[in-house]
Length: 217
Ligand SMILES: C[S@@+](CC[C@H](N)C(=O)[O-])C[C@H]1O[C@@H](n2cnc3c(N)ncnc32)[C@H](O)[C@@H]1O
Image (cartoon, rainbow, N blue to C red):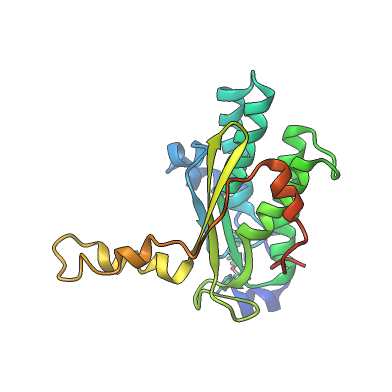
């Protein structure tokens, strides 16, 4: 696999993809977190997903180990693993490839065809979690603040979603030092979601696909 698309893109955007062996060596440094189904991973310059795809594969391997015997749990925890992968990417073709690559891994693992509710739910989740935007300004391509969904699995086929602004979340570090004069500031704002959604099933999530403007064309 080529690690560059063109010299111009390398010069303009620093676009050099990470080879699989190096991705794996780096993920091994945080092995437990990379394999935990509900660890949240954000790749702020995700390219076509070389890191996120491997993280998803590791999460799915854990799903298989823990929930392989129950098809219901296997499918829902696989979706939870996908829900915990986030990316930002400046270039439209890269973020679209990232979405395709991740959806392909997910669909292959569960043997889904495109019409399946779970496939559509996964496509919807990826349309929310993979953002075409600028990780430095924390704005989308359309100039709006980047918001991310925090997904959780409530059990019995229901997922919880709360939305947060990335620039507010990343403000966490300024307020976190315990001995800081400002330690008490900002936490309320930080943990106040922009929106809390009602619990949703796979079918509810699938029905959301295409109902909102998407970041990925
Ligand atoms: C060195 S490549 C790495 C891609 C991927 N993480 C990998 O390891 O294969 C850097 C990527 O970051 C993207 N990029 C550059 N500046 C960015 C920014 N401010 N916000 C989001 N993505 C950016 C580029 O388009 C490129 O796809």
